[in-house]
Image (cartoon, rainbow, N blue to C red):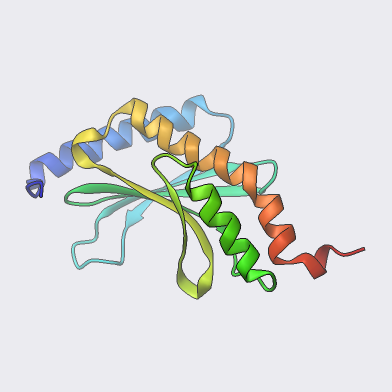
Length: 158
């Protein structure tokens, strides 16, 4: 297991992520907003960035980056819990997980579908952050409509 980061090391990582987020927002026309906060999951309030982007298949895609003592966790909300065809949706998600690198579909609060992953703190680079955001964005854009039509089929009938 890796050692915990010192406050100084965490501060350096947070500054590196902040510089990347600022450049990414300035360079990408897809970025609608960048918000910053802290996670509610620990008493320490880990630094968190919210990158809101416009999509085509899904209007808004928000990626959360949360810097922890050992890893940078990233996630995006894909869709609410399917109302129908739950087994088929789960089958699709598991099959897609097999082809993903650095991310996986999961079921979260209220059975909603998320796309998540994590990166060891020592591996945080601009290139890796580009890859993470690109993977999450492209995957959501690729699967959103098909999953929505499967999980809410009766709403699309006609």
